[in-house]
Length: 321
Ligand code: RIB
Ligand code: CA
Image (tube, rainbow, N blue to C red; front, side, top):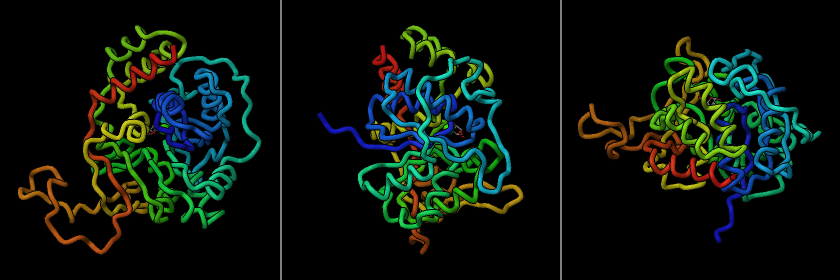
C-alpha cells in the first residue's frame, strides 16, 4: 500500500472546499487544516472546517484560524455562491471539536520549518501563506511545493480577468507566486472543464449516509443558484490524489497583477513561449518560440478528465458510508 502523501490545507470552507476536504481526508495524510476568510468570514470558515472533521470522523486533525481579512483589508466575499455561512442554507450544529489556540500562520511556519515532505494545498485567498513568508522568509526554501486553486490561464470569474482567490488578496498572491516555491496552479481554465449539475446532486443523495446527504444538501444550494458548480477546490486536490485526472499541464511564467484597473488580481501567464502552428488553435499546442528569460515558476493544469474525476468523487463519498 503506497504511503499517503502528507499535506497541510489552507482553505475557506466553502462548498467546494468541503468536497476537497472530504476527498483529502480519505486519500491523503492531512496533517492540519488552516482556515482563512474568503468565501465567507473566518468565524464561519473555521467553524465549518471543525464540523467537516467531525463529519469525516477525523477530529484528530487539528484546525487553526488564520487571517479573516486580506493584507490591504479590502473586504470581498462570495456569499452569493456559498451562502452567508459558507455551506449554503444548511444549518450545522456547533462543533464539539475545538479550534487550536495557535495562530494558523504560526502553525504554517512551525510545520514547514520542521518538516520537508509536506505539500501545502491552498484553496482560498493566499493571505495566511503570504503572512507566513513575510514573518519567516526561510520558508521559501522549506516548502517543497504549493498546490494552489487560484487564478486562470485565461478568463476570470470575479472579474473578466481575475479569479476569486487571487482577487481577494492580490498582494498576498504576488508574494507567493514570486517566492520561488514550486507552484502547481489549478485555475478556472481547468476547473471549468468540470460541471456538477442536479443529476450529480441526486447521485450524492442516492449514495446517502451522513456525508452523502450533507454533500447533496450543500451542493444543491450552489447548483440551484447558478445551474452548475465546478467544485474548483475538489478538482485541485484530485491532482494530488489521482494525477492522471490532470491530462495535461505546462510550465510557464506567471505574474500576479496588483494594479490594473481591469486586471487587478489577474494571473498573467506568459504564453509567448507556447504557440501552435495556427495562432487560432489552442495555446500550448507545441513549443514554438525561444523560452522567455522569465523563470517558469508555475506548472499550470490545462486538460482535465471529468469522467475519472467524478468516479473518484462519488467513490470517495460512498466510502464514508
Ligand atoms: O474561484 C473559485 C475559488 O474561490 C474556490 O476556492 C472557491 O471556494 C472560492 O474560494
Ligand atoms: Ca475555496
